[in-house]
Amino acid sequence: MAFQDYYKVLGITKTSSQEEVKKAYRKLARKHHPDLNPNDQEAKRKFQEINEANEVLSDPEKRKKYDQYGENWEHSEEYEKARSAQNSSRPNYSYSQGEEPGFDPNEFSSFFESMFGGGSGFQGRSQSRKLSGEDFTGQLSLSFEEAYTTHSRMLQIGEQKIRIQIPAGVENGQTIRLKGYGGKGQNGGPNGDLLVSFSVEESKEFTRKGSDLYKVLEIDLYTAVLGGEELVKTMDGKVKIKISPGTQNGALIRLKGKGFPVYKKEGQFGDLYLTYSVKIPTQLNPEQIALFEKLASLKS
View: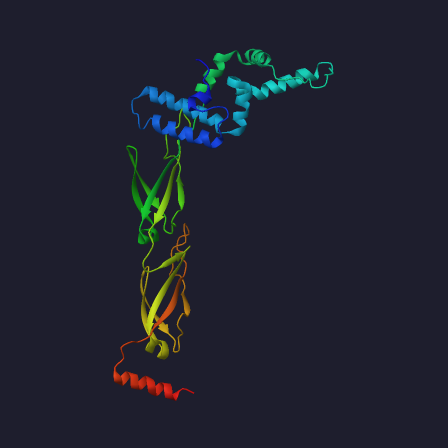
C-alpha cells in the first residue's frame, strides 16, 4: 500500500497549527463517519485514514517524529539507538566550524529495511493499529425539579437508543462522561465516549448555589412584631416554622437539610436559607391609622 501523507489526508500543511489540525479532523470525521454513511466501504476506509492521521498529527511528539522521519516515524527510536551505538564504536572525528553530522534519509531507510523488512511491513502494522472511536457530545435540558431527583432519560445516538441514569444534584453546565457510547473503535480499538452537558432551568422561587438554596419569605408587619408561624414551601413539601417576635426585615435563617441533593452523595442535602421580607401595610382605614398613631405616641 502506498505511503499516506497525513497532512494531505486532513487537507492541511506542515505549518498548520494544532488547532487547525483539530478543526480539520472534526470536519472530515463528521463527513465520513460510518454511522452517517452505512454500508459505504469507501467512507469507512476514509474515516480510518482520517483517524490514523489525527492520532499522529494531534500529538506534538508524534508529529515531530513524523515530520523528521516520514512514513517510518514509528521506528525512529530504534534507529537513534542503533545509530548511537554505531557512532560510539567509530573513531572520533573532528568537524570544521559550521559543519555538523546531520540526518541522512538514505541511511535511515537502509536501517529500517534491514531491521523491519522494508516498507510493506510498516504499512501492514499501520493498518492494524487499534484506533479509539470518536467522542460524541450533546446537551440535555432539565427542569429545576428534574435536577433535584435521580431519574432515567432515553437518548437517541444515531440509530441507537440508550437509557442513561441522571444523578440528583447535577448543575447547570455540568458535563458527565459515558464510557463507550461514542463512535465505534477501529481494528478492535475501544469505542469513544459520550459527553453530556446539562442545561438546568432556573427556578422562579429558589436561587441555587451549589447544593444550597435561597428563598425570600414575605411576612406581614404584625407577624414580624408579635411573632407567629408560617408554612414554607421547600423542594420536598411544606414545613412550619416559628417566627420570633421583633423579627427584622432582611433577617436570615437556615433550614438544615432542606436544600438541593449533594451530587453523587446519596442522602446528603444542602441547606435552605430564608430571608425575611417584612411587608408594610398600605391603604389603612381610619381606625388602623389611629392605632398606629397611638403606638407612635407611646414610644420612648
